[in-house]
Length: 422
Figure 1 (cartoon, rainbow, N blue to C red):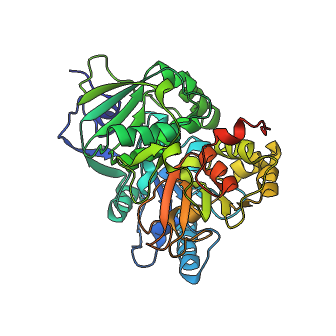
Figure 2 (figure 1 turned 60 degrees about the vertical axis):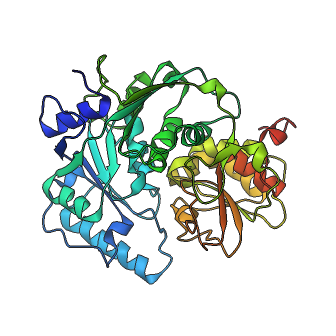
Figure 3 (figure 1 turned 135 degrees about the horizontal axis):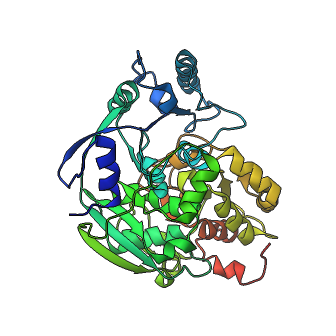
């Protein structure tokens, strides 16, 4: 009996010829990523030894630069840890900073066919690279760093076969919202993406899908490998790897065929994502106070380009705060060179340094009582971005940018059709 992508990766990592749903698997962790909350004084436990410092990546991303003394203390603990073990792959505040999952993508750390763990729940982002990447709890993260091993209970896999091509103005954030609306909760299942339409999706688009797999409650969200993926990794990381392809006779809990051409721009209504998305037209006219583009899911160069095309030659509506946070300083520099940052700032957007920022309600954009926000980030549950009375809608970067200009939730096509495209 054949195996799925995740099953083949975990079989390799555990030294077994085959594995199957229901198995409890002890696997070698190829990459262990620690972020600044990993060093929070209330949960940090001193690690006395590391299995291999070369497997460790440390990224300060959630609160950078430090907004208060507690976070400054977390950073100090992290820097001491890096110095003590001689960790080379360290991304502090400065030139190389960024959100951990974006850094992992830019540096090619999520090697195809390998296992990667981090304490952040959106670690599944690495699945875009044919990597079994998953968030784990703080004790499991310390265990993986110290012993080089982690464990999973293997779940069955749902296969999505992608066909066709997304229409102009439709992006994979819309595809994710359609999946959440149409198929709902994916708890106790993995997701595997494949099919001929992969050739039409760039790596950032795929990473949006794998990142948002967390919001479908999937255990792992992985892509089968193709030349686009393999060339992307080889250009960034010389380390050897063995990509894993699904067997022709792999057993899936379900196979679902998707025609990308049928997807339209959607928006998730406040407080949840699962089965809570509607066409943008059904939410249009809702007044907003804040619009946010950023996070590990949608702080990419393509996202900033889409926002710039919408706002070019226009101004953010009075009473609206339009916040844009690149996923990394490298993306920030690329956006400056391409002219996107100038367009956004001239429209009235506030562009911040690379960080998780407003996505988690930590700093640089916390919502106040009874405010309404439309976000192109990862979550919209009550209290996620600030005061629990705030209402959070979720949509694509283009929809968010159009709403910032209009002052109400608005379809981006209303602006793009007017010709202000750069």
